Length: 198
Image 1 (cartoon, helix red, strand yellow):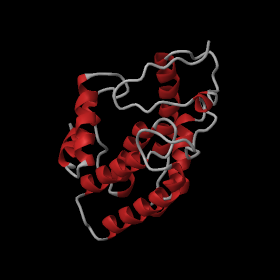
Image 2 (tube, rainbow, N blue to C red):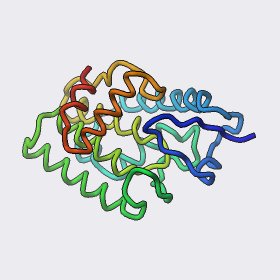
Image 3 (cartoon, rainbow, N blue to C red):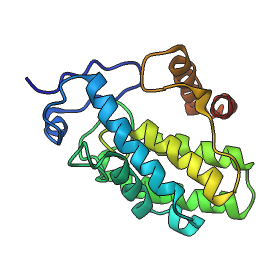
């Protein structure tokens, strides 16, 4: 039977090889996949709550990969591994390590030089991270959690509420979020900041 995913606006399709990485073979629908992924993500969030991270730990390729693995390792064999396929979003797969290194360096510079407000630093990082699209799946959820960790662990500020809605399903909140992401693609970041705080 296999995994049959009905994609919604803003979701990146998995290729057949990536689908083969599904560890729970009884999952056949998007709804079942979302449920198992959410359970795994909640375990990852608990892992982050129990730890303190300095910016030099959090803003590394190792942490980016480790967090993705914590979020998805119970569901996907390739959790925490950069994608090797090309998608309709993101940089070419061979450029992921380079673009991520540039982003990490930029973010450290923003923090050290107070280039932007705390909120804008976190949201700019989130937006560029999802634009790089490091992983086959889960980039939006991963980048939102990273933004929350930047706020909480680096700045000691409250984490974002992200519209207080489930952004995995097709809802009005998701439509507003996708619209804000598209504006951020044009360097109009304020709508995404406002959404994250709403």
